[in-house]
Length: 228
Image (cartoon, rainbow, N blue to C red; front, side, top):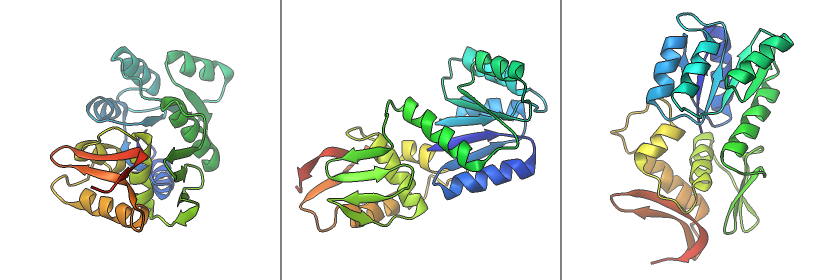
């Protein structure tokens, strides 16, 4: 999942980015409202974390503009403004959640997970395809009950594939959601990580879950399919 953090305090932005990357998210940072608006309208994000007191364009105005542009990306306002009136205004402007500073990072993570579940119409924290399961809280994967160790990036890629199970995902879609804005699209990194997952998930199983569609991309099938 790819997240945009719009925050002008560099230490706060860096802290959030480090923490989210450790959890497997791809993260871009915008340091003012105008830059945040540009990023949000030109890239495909799963969620936005938005400060209110921003240079060039304040957070409330930015939130209003994004909703006027029919951009429905979930938005969490993260700000030091903590009055009830501030919270009501932020939510009425179009934000999906409101968290005040100082904050516990664990709470921010939980709110992100809740909004992503809602966005993907999933009540459970467990994703499942055939006999493959993925816990989005613990980041643990298992197939036929056997735990599969995953690196942070492998987890991110598998989560994206499972959230889009039975749908074709292109390399461009993967790069936009699993890697950040600095990703070099001319490398074969995506193919390499797909192979890593295949070796961990499908190797030794007669039924394969991850398939390559030549010239189109990849698909993870919910129902197990015989090897061609």
